[in-house]
Image 1 (spheres, rainbow, N blue to C red):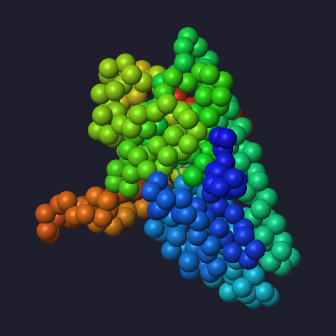
Image 2 (cartoon, rainbow, N blue to C red; image 1 turned 30 degrees about the vertical axis):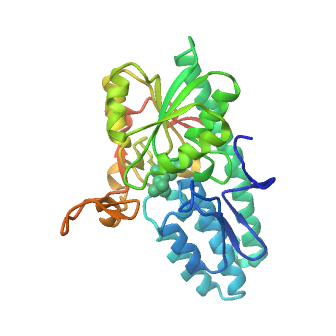
Amino acid sequence: MAGRHRRGGTVRRTIDWDGGAVMIIDQCALPASFETLRLTTVDELIGAIRRLAVRGAPALGAAGALGTALSAFRHPGDAEAVRADARRLADARPTAVNLSWGVRRALTRLAEGPEAVLAEAKALMDEDERVNREASRRAAELLLDRCPSRPLRLLTHCNAGRLATVGWGTALGVVWHLHEAGRLEYVFADETRPLLQGARLTAWELAEAGVPYRLLPDSAAASAMARGLVDCVVVGADRIAANGDVANKIGTYGLALAAARHGLPFVVVAPMSTVDKELPDGGGIVIEERDAGEVTCVAGQRVAPPGATAYNPAFDVTPAELITAVVTEHGIFPPA
Ligand SMILES: CSC[C@@H](O)[C@@H](O)C(=O)COP(=O)(O)O
C-alpha cells in the first residue's frame, strides 16, 4: 500500500509517538534492514536527526514537535527547561524550516501541560499526511495537463517519499498518484551523492510499491534529459522563500538548470509548512555543511587519498525563475 510502511503486518509511520518515547524508522539501517528506534530522551532524538536516522523536511517537523512533547513530559511545570530543549532541537539541523516550525507549534500549547503539547504534535502529524496527499495530487494533475499524451517518465532527486514525511511523501506522492492512475511509465531515481538517499531510500520505497524505476548516477541526469528519456523533474523542498526560491538537496539546482536547457517542467512539491514567509528570497537560507568524511569515504570505506579534504554542502538553492511550479496543498506558490 503506497504511503505506509508495512513490516510483519504492522502499518508504520516514519515517526510516531510510542508510549512516552519517539519511535522512528532507522533510515541509516535501510535498505539492508528495517529497524525501528525508540528514543526516550531529547539528546537521543537530536543525535538521530544529526546522523539522518530521521530526515526529510516534513518528518523533521514531526521530530521537532514530538521532541518538544518528550521534553514537556520529562520536565513537567519547568517551562524554562522545555524551552532550552526546544532551542537545541530546532538547531539540530539548520536548513529545513519544518524542524523549527514543528518545535514552535508544539510550544504554543506548553502552558496547558504535556498532554496538550503531545496533542498538538499528533495533530501536526495527522495534517502532514493529509496536506502532502493533497499537494502531490495537485502536482500530478498539473503534470498530466502539461504532458497528456502518454505515461510519464519522471526524474527525482534525494528522497521525498514516505520516509521523508510522516506517511505519504511529496515528490514521491506524485509518483504514487500517477502509478495508481496508470499514468506512470517509470521513475529515474538520482542516487544522490554523497549520502545516497536516492539509491538507499527512494529505490527501496519504489521497489516496495512496485513502481518501475532505474537508479541514475547524479552525473547522468543531464545526459538522460538530452537523450529524451525524461518528461519532467519532480523534487521536494527543505525551505521555500517568499519569492519562490527553493532550498533542497545538493544537486537540485543543477537539475533545474539542465531541465530548463531541455525545456522540461521542473516541479517542486511541498507542504505550506516548508514556506518561510519571513525570508524574502533564497539568499538568506542557511545551508548546512556536513563532514568532509561523507565525501572522502564511500559506504564507510575511505576512497580519497590521505590528507584529501572536501566541501560538503547538504543543500543548494534553486532560483524561482528555473522552477515551473512550486505546488503546495493550496495550489501553486507564490499565488499569481
Ligand atoms: C519531502 S522531503 C524534501 C526534502 O527534505 C528532501 O528532498 C531533502 O533534501 C532531504 O535532505 P536530507 O539531508 O536527507 O534530510
